[in-house]
View 1: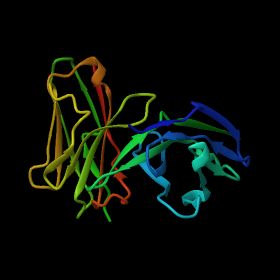
View 2 (view 1 turned 180 degrees about the horizontal axis):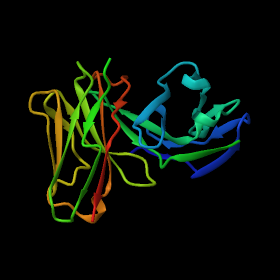
View 3 (view 1 turned 180 degrees about the vertical axis):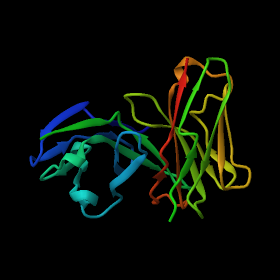
Length: 115
Length: 114
């Protein structure tokens, strides 16, 4: 069975500083990997996804993530954080299915942005 | 394009009462998902529909939870009777239906069981 670990429950970063969120996964085959963001009272919004090909994936809002098979990791990065990036971030691994894919989420990392 | 709609947004009930949540997916999306998100945790898949058929309900507590998608469009998730540990946000998501498709999430229904 697949699983996702996000080691950092909370991260505080200053506005304008860089951000890196860690994600480690366990899956028996080539994974589909996702990063979602959830703002208070909102549903989840997809930031980026990895299916195959280039291991450095660009997403929305200036985010990128790098897939490292040898480390079973898919860390999310942003070079310069804005106050609006304060939210909860979830990494997920998707299992192939004939109809859609089954997502298993990590526990999330809450990002606080200091002015 | 309209997103995934859910109602109600908030619900407070007493334990042992019943409750129902409604979801209308993005038009044309064949696959619909219900997730449970307990405070401080990531979402957990409860049930997945492809059109009006169940693809995966392995994590649905079937003694108290039920879900249907009779016409292959909107869906209802019911809890009867509710327990304190059912307090959570219930998220609905939809996707076109292929394994590479992105899931699009609704705003969720926050359930509090007293």
